[in-house]
Length: 217
Figure 1 (tube, rainbow, N blue to C red):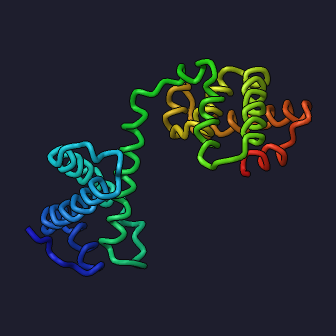
Figure 2 (cartoon, rainbow, N blue to C red):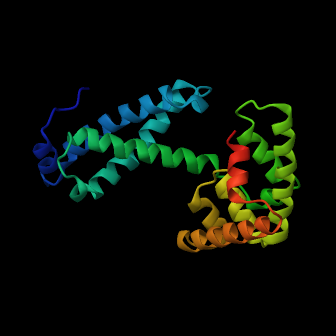
Figure 3 (cartoon, one colour):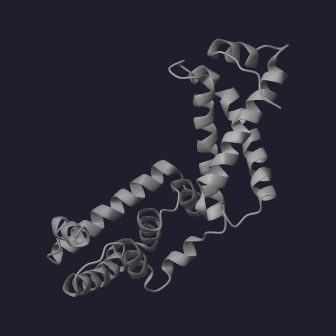
């Protein structure tokens, strides 16, 4: 079934009309489902092992949520692009957010306290660009110093938050939920942790400029 073509004004009018809203929502959901299906099947390499039926089911479910999200944000549409382009961007953001939540659904901050967590995480980040043996050895030594500094200068809560967000790229909302706090409090926790870590390292003669230069080579 091919959705009905509408102008921006017609989309807004139909989605807010008692008589025409149902059909407009069906048309919008179908469009968003197609966009989400393309995103999941063509742009998410981590989902290529899934069967087509699984991708289709995910696209249907996400399209339902995306349609409701668009409907609740109609007042935010400014008409600077096609309505469907604007709606598709919302749909893809919904899909991305859900994929991130699914990835960390079983995540636990308790894993952050494992030995050598920082060193192994650092290796994954800085091991992307080949360096000479001397620089590699220097980085390894500094990473171990950083690991010790993290555990010495920070509280366990600060350590977990900083490593989870800065190194493991865990979503802020996930970390905040597991810490029993909110995003604003988590921002402050991480800010304080970075400040304490910087002061601790500078006492040992390791400046921010040196560290950035070492790991950006």
